[in-house]
Image (cartoon, rainbow, N blue to C red; front, side, top):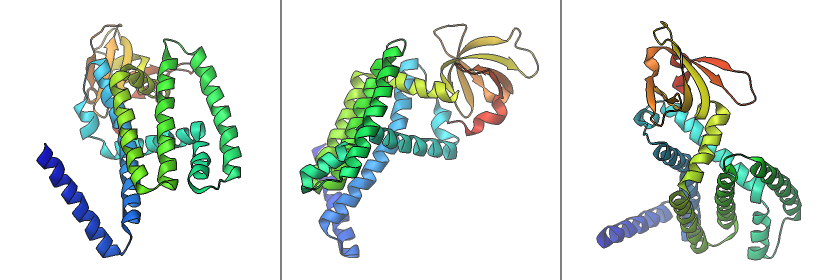
Amino acid sequence: MYSTMVCTSHFILSMLTKIINLTGWTKETVLKLLLWLLSIIFIWLFPKLLFLIYMGNEGFFSYDFFEHGQFGLRVFFSASELMLVASSLAMFGIVLPIVQKQSTGEADWFLFVMFGLMNVLFLSILTVTAISSKNDEWFSVLTIIAVAFFICLHISFLMWKSPSKQIRSFLALILVVFSLSTVVSTQFATALKLGLRYFGVGGGITVTIQDREGKLSPPAKGELVLLSPEYAYIRVNSERKITVFPLSAALFMTVEKENQPSTEQNLTRQSRGTP
């Protein structure tokens, strides 16, 4: 283990030296760019971690989810990354001008006021939503808020702090995310469940399933756990076990979204681009 760490550190140092020699940039500039890149990759991978936690909590694993439909998944994860960063700024963007003031002695007061008003409004809406939520979903909201705070804090460090402090901030972000995913994995899973439910591709939304030839009679009813590129993972008739329906069977599924009219989907045609 120790020899592996030594080899890795030597490799990183040699790569840094090569980049510095090729570009003529300072070591500080190269480290900052590397940390920005690693941070973007880590936040991009965060939704994958959520899906792994969600599958573990629900008691199944979807191989095809990660192996097929890669273009759709890349688009989904990229959009999730943008939404996560935007949500973090909407909740704690005021951290940026505060860290700027603390690091440089100057602050952008326009950003301070703008983020302050936005953060108060957004957090107020989240508080009302969390209080009125059912099944202790407010705890999941608090978990995501905690992650959003550390993401925003790390972004401010990337912008205003020295590379040494940026490295510590990045390591702290990784530690917080993995610690929370271990300690409060159920809350992470519930947070993703809310997102899947909103987009109508899982999270326990009520569905009715019927095959094209009418062999499934009467139609099966259940809760859609996840709609992957090749399968529909469903709890039929409130059973604990999950029944896997291959989409190649030309199934039809009626999705009953909350507070919205039911919509009928042809799983074979529409699920290929589903994350």
